[in-house]
Length: 325
Image (tube, rainbow, N blue to C red; front, side, top):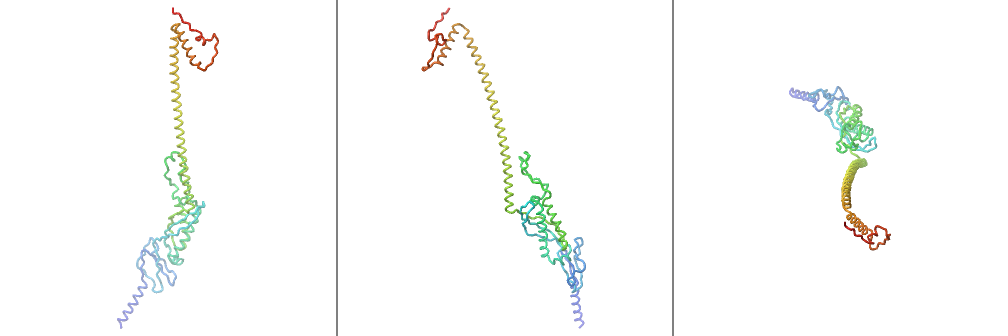
């Protein structure tokens, strides 16, 4: 009988002790509820204080509630929204969060599924508000100090083509704005929002067409600039060619005229020397010149009228032989 009682009380003790003792893992935080109401403080909720291990509670009337302590992921659905400059984009972002106050979290949300639903609403709403407050260039640019690679020809020409338009904030600042706006709201649910980032930003079809059209326009402007610069260089080359050609032609003409002038002078000198060498030479020169004049002025169909005293009619009358002395 004593053995039976001993075994009975031992079993009762084991049941009582097992209902009093519980363990807390390093990846979780625990709080106790008594008749459904939280009592005491949350165990292992402080990231700087590790309270994992064996703990005790009142048997039967108190219940252990385990809440995730690790950093959790939120990956919301992609949503269409408009920027301040009336361009439609599809924004997909993600966040990291943790349960900072498990008792408040349990009281207001109960489970992770409800928390993710609330985060969908809050982060989505704040993202919509921030995107609507900024132009598209602020959403797609990550760093306002970024300088794109440019064509050397455009750089040398001091062209504004290929330059990124200036921005005031950039996408990283927009991330911070969304985080700062959502943190106070989710804190009331016992949640600490650690970070919010853009994962993907897609353009709608109409926006893509406008962007492609702007890119094509920019490329056409660059091509027009190259063509105009090429035409300018071609005009310079043609101008230099025409100038050099005129210079060469004028120099050749000058030399030609100098040579002709020298030749005429020499010929004139020879004619003068021959003409003045003797009276018979002068008469012969006069005779030859007269015959040349006949050849140039008289043809078979030429009708001329001369006076008897005309020098041209002289040879038609007679040729006087000069007596040699």
